[in-house]
Image (tube, protein in one colour):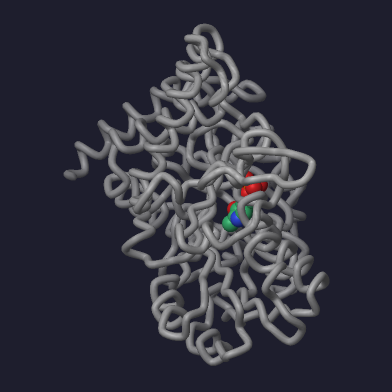
Length: 411
Ligand code: PLP
């Protein structure tokens, strides 16, 4: 794409997001918190609204027209998700409430029945709590051990140290595709390659990967890939666990209830086929319909276009932040996507976030659900600006100007 083509497309994309066209505290909104939750395009909002107005009914069991329509829309979204991440089959797409539920499902259904005392779950030091605590729980339940691969001061995973930690006791490796607090793109391809050679399953926490990078689970060769709808411009309360069919097939259900069964008697229950075996109860039908619309929207732009546009903007943001007197960047990995954490002078990040909000600039402050990572850097939290393809250089300039004002206020 030429620079002018990029500019035109970015303006068009932004126009598609109603929430971005408002003022906050009398200033046009600059939204730099997409890593926490991304805004939704009108296409998603309209798809959910149309479904609610015209098609809403419960899925799967109904013989009437609305139930058929709801089922078609819901299962159609599953097909879109399969295609979006290039899974081999729709049986491999388990719909969840988010990344958190997807990882807990793997911990409890895949790991818990098989883990033995002395086994290890290997993660890294830059994980979100959702990729730490479910493993701690299952380790407590089974006597297994949680092992943490180190990072360096740039916020990169120390790959060779991680590979050195892989031994016969490692039962599963859990690693972020992109670290939410720092924006580090982790070397998942290398980790998966080494793990596969040793027959160790890998779960990728893709919550921050899918919104920014092209993800092909077959090319990656991972065993599980988890992500959330609300970070990829879809509704909250939706998410996906991709799992290799062979593994999902071998796992017991995680929760019991309606829809996950074929037949129930008091003597015996026969479970449903994949992926329904893992989807007990009435799902978030409208949310999943919206997630399908988000995928249509992303595919119309193209993930490669999104990645290259965002890379450019991220580089610009980092270069401009570096010019701010008193800034300390947290996370300077060579491969980054979307997010940049920073500290400014000795201003507490919550104070900084509040002052920026007064100027219409929304950033996230605090520990970003990555407390062990904050402990590594010896800080309690950071300010984090995270980008999506609807942001532009003007947004970055507004961020920088707002930081200047914060400095003036704090003297
Ligand atoms: N993993 C990462 C890397 C995240 O950034 C997040 C959310 O911020 C999660 C997991 C948890 O996602 P959710 O709260 O949607 O389940």
